[in-house]
Length: 151
Image (cartoon, rainbow, N blue to C red):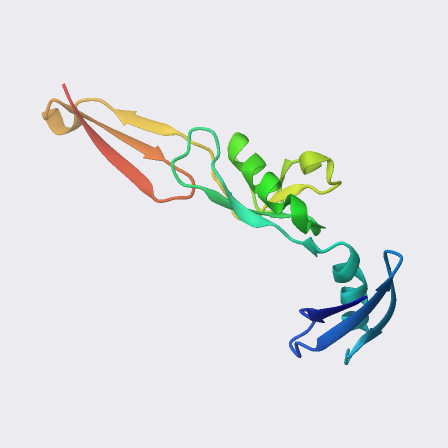
């Protein structure tokens, strides 16, 4: 059986043909580089993809970006993306931090690709004798959100 694949291993986008017998690739043709052959051998038998997405940290309104540490099976992408929504790690989170270890037993970790600073509240009572309190809260990622609280 032959399987046609467009290579994404380099910018050339070669049209590859993988000859598959008894569940394994016997021969690859059409590649211009060694990456193409390796890509076709993997893609024809068990396609793999890197998952990128967003997660929300506990107490934060805005999401931060994440990616998997290595490719995961393509047929598990949707399940792993759904798993990202179930987790809400505690800030602070820094780019490169592992936020989920071994997601769905794929042997792959989910890493933050964006900082999510710690939450803090700065309160000041009765600003300039106005009878109002001003609270500044930092969400992840910045900027500051200022909230006026009437007394």
